[in-house]
Length: 157
View 1 (cartoon, rainbow, N blue to C red):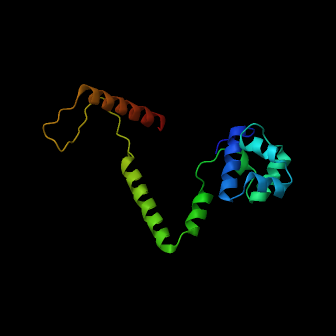
View 2 (cartoon, rainbow, N blue to C red; view 1 turned 180 degrees about the vertical axis):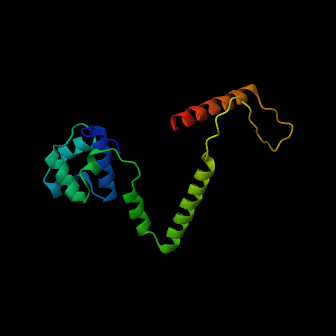
View 3 (cartoon, helix red, strand yellow; view 1 turned 135 degrees about the horizontal axis):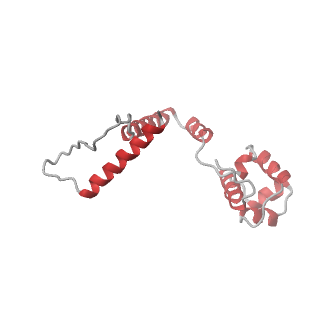
């Protein structure tokens, strides 16, 4: 979440999201809250930004925190848990297995240890193709990466 307080575009996007999620039209919101249709239209179109009392009114109406309206959101734990909880047990199992597979794949992609400090720039590589030659560009990229690891290693001492 980034603090985007006062950002009309963020507010408009979030308000539109909660209206759509709750199947609430501008007319219904206007009637339910006693706010003019044109005011709500201007909020949804990011022409104006509501006063704090109106933000609180909207948050209470949708049953959310004020920050849910005024801050830019990424996927939150709350929304993931909420969606997961609404799934049938068989579908929950599918989601869980998928999450486990993604985590395993992510862990395989990470480098798990830093190399010891080297004086020479020797390295080994493996390829399934015994005839493959490492290009100068590839060697340069490998050397750059080794420099990066050395710097990171030095900072962690």
